[in-house]
Image (tube, rainbow, N blue to C red; front, side, top):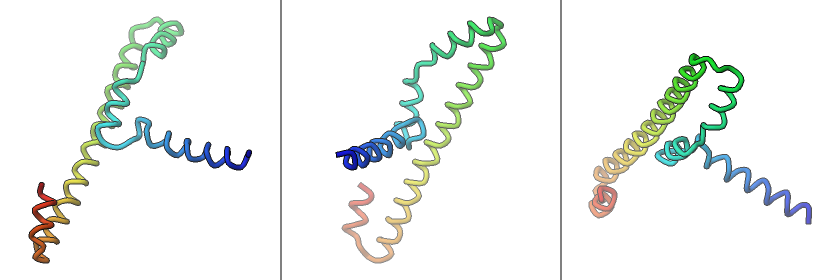
Length: 104
């Protein structure tokens, strides 16, 4: 029984790792935007009530969001390049029906 639980836990860890903010595309953006930053901000305010800490936190959140947006854009640009390559290679081969399906 323990062996089967070990396989199940490994499978869940693998699926959880890809659904975090390090996911791909728009899911990563939504995941980050749904994150609750209030507890971290509250704890930071208790430790250091200075306003500079607040500005640093806001700057970090914006830069992290910018990175996630760039990753998302790169992901979709790669998908578009791959699709364009497939359309061109299939049209060169004369597969008109397949090209029309890919364009759709």
